[in-house]
Image (tube, rainbow, N blue to C red; front, side, top):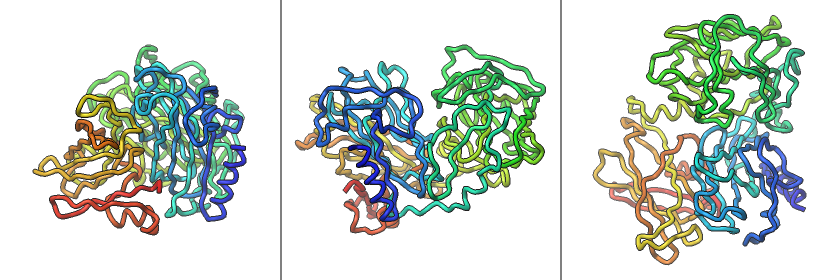
Length: 514
């Protein structure tokens, strides 16, 4: 029945020039997933649809959904039928490699066997949306998801078939490839978006390994360089595939990989596990004779022991060999993994950079979480957009506990550090956990401070707590009338409040769950 409901929702959405998915995690109809295991619970969850909370997907896992439109909203539904204590199950949620929800603890939020949901809005798609759940350090249990919906927004547009045709390859796979699974999404949408298909994967500097359905060959097809392997206790940030970033080839070296002539997507992974300071290692990356990343300094880019992927789209191979070359500027170039495929690659790391082989310099600032986050500490004062994220407080000012079911909304206060007064925003929705603010030109995104408190249904409040800064990607709660209209298309479709503040401007918030 749930399967037919999902198909019906998709059909209705399609007829209205939209697109919608409902995925019942852990059930027989569970699709689009990689990793994790299916688990069931006989415990009845308090819900209007308790049957949706009988099956779950549990573990470190992700869903990769092929999409036909440009902008979506995801709603993730949780319950806690197993944990019996706060902190027993804590996890993060990433969308397209960017952390959107931090340190979720469903038992802490609502207790056992109650529904909790999170809405993630403004998800931009270029053909595939990846939703990933990862256990945080110290958590006893792994992430648990009951089901989720993914729905295109009213202002989304159909993806152009021409935008993806250049990334499709005339070749299906190389005879030298490890014939492993095609990574991520299952089927192409009618828009012509090409799902990623693996051609070859190499664990640089290491032995063969299988991770998340991809078979990585032992180091091969290289010339020059030396190898190193780091201890299993080395924790690699920004990935659940630590093993891939603990082995490396370093020095001046190249890879010459036999493939059929065609157009490919190339992914080069790296982590700086040796040096501690900026500019102790600098190098250049080329493929097929074109420099695709120059003056690479991983410490400056993402820090130590942190996974970073360079994704190069539309690499044209005309001689049957894909050439990759790394040249040292300071110390020694380094590389930890290579993935070659066709179609749209969905990052599995939180820090990455996307370039186009046809114009690598123009694309060098494309949408990677690393370039976004680094702008927060830039000294250029360019302004921009930042996101404030928070975990629901658990204690009232009186010291009495407060659960998510007791919260009526939130009071958020933020300001430029140089300002004397704060801007106050009241959010009358207990289910949200993030808010977008604009930073004016002439200021850095790092020159903003914010705090929030929960407002109880009984008129009580929690103490103010510092908010968590989130990555600038996405669109959660717009602040201006143009943003409101862009999100809702018709202002009458949105529930919104306008709150004056001391600067005589106003703040607009909307509830897109209306």
